[in-house]
Amino acid sequence: MSILIVGSVAYDGIETPFGKRDRILGGSATYLSLTSSYFCDDVRLVGVVGNDFAQSDIEIFKNKGINLDGLQTDNTGKTFFWAGRYHFDLNTRDTLDTQLNVFERFNPVIPEDFKSSEYVCLGNIAPALQSVVLDQVTNPKLVILDTMNFWIEGAKDDLVKALSRVNVLIINDSEARELSGEPNLIKASAIIRDMGPSTLIIKKGEHGALLFMGEEIFAAPGFPVLDIFDPTGAGDTFMGGFAGWLAKTDDLSPENMRRAVIYGSVMASYCVEKFGPERLMNLNQDAIQYRYDAFRELSEIPDNHF
Amino acid sequence: MSILIVGSVAYDGIETPFGKRDRILGGSATYLSLTSSYFCDDVRLVGVVGNDFAQSDIEIFKNKGINLDGLQTDNTGKTFFWAGRYHFDLNTRDTLDTQLNVFERFNPVIPEDFKSSEYVCLGNIAPALQSVVLDQVTNPKLVILDTMNFWIEGAKDDLVKALSRVNVLIINDSEARELSGEPNLIKASAIIRDMGPSTLIIKKGEHGALLFMGEEIFAAPGFPVLDIFDPTGAGDTFMGGFAGWLAKTDDLSPENMRRAVIYGSVMASYCVEKFGPERLMNLNQDAIQYRYDAFRELSEIPDNHF
Image (cartoon, rainbow over the protein chains, first blue to last red):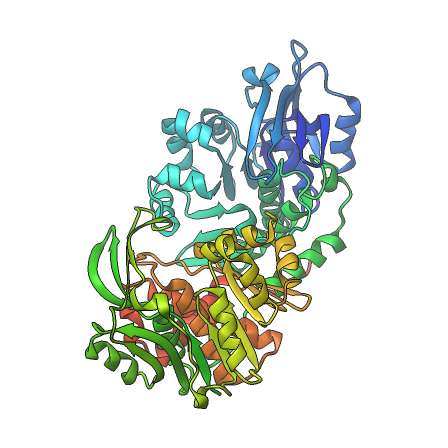
């Protein structure tokens, strides 16, 4: 199966308590496409870069077999740049700089060949643009959407419109509370699913994730990472692993959705071990499977009778 | 096997967003003994009550077969009283009143018949008193200790002394961070286990619990409770279910420790459904087993190969 990925391609400046990178490849579409390329050999990226985008970074995508026919180069400006500094506990960060540059004028034009993609990943961009993408695709099997507090607060109407057209929403716990206006996550999930997405994933950082699908709830554990180096991109990476597994297997059963959540968690747990997307450039299937099995061991409850 | 339980017996005044009780049976030894009585038929309580303690409350323990030979009645004063109000999200509470009363002079004298108890539960009391209990017992198979921020901040030396003599410590995540001085829970667990307890359980509220034992980590999910009525006693109840299951089975293997964590979680998830210990008075083995199975379903990761 094919995956269409729409999101940002950026350069990030990142400071964590463990070090610093002035300018490293970033953006939601970068993490999504690199991650899903481990599962799916037909990954299609739609995004925009500026006149400063390095050929060596183009090669990073090409080395993973990612189709860049939808990557626009806007020579009138520079690539989206973001800089931030993480605090000691890595749970909070300050934005130091945001230069939207060519991303401000981004119009996601889906190439003709990409319109029939079976799996559609709407990375974290303006909800109105997510809807523009949905206007262009034809009959996808599954549409997965990511968003953030910024859009919940500033573009709620657009977001609600986009949500009515998606199958899976992936957000974190504070966003779920904000979007629903309900502190209890179980109640919040019902309110959000009434907005459109029949399947909902709530990410809880170090505490794992919850999958709501049909009448089922699945609680995925957080992986005990000893040294979190840089949390940037962990959420996009989760989504890339989730979508990648589903596209690889083309199986939307509840059981396989659980596997997809774990593969997403596996990829995110690797991502945070190095700066930016560095760790995502040199993984292999053995490493991914090894950690999948570690997740199973971590949360296995033995059968038992009273 | 027998369980010795030492802790407070109290009256609580509780206000939650869902209602109010002016005076309801409470205290760590109450929750611990009621809960473990579902698993073990030789539960031995050591605590103190005052001249106002109702015979009807004595009957609550007796109905569950709990041995009260170690329950002192101090006629010179009243029973420990605590009152608190929970906030809207139930994660924080204000203490409205604390009257230690006879509990201030509590000296845990272990009856001769109780000294050879195989399982010892040291509920949340002053660490110096927890050590006084350990001075009296002879060769227990397993000693389990609960504590709180109050003692970590105010009686750290006493606590460290007590910890050097216990097998299992049960604390919550903020307490683990405070006790170890380390924000990462995986690193914190190593620091704390170096203080004595070879096994550590870190409770994370709605996010479940982590069990550290040998080289293994077990992540237990939080149960998706739709209506949390009153969180009072949930931690003690967890410990009672954990200890009760171990005493019932007398099996300290890592696999059985995982079961004990889930039975603890099951009992805590029931406890919060009603005020105080009300829900703990009318459970049965079928209800407990039913929810154990629900925990398994909730967190089951299907086997898989890439």
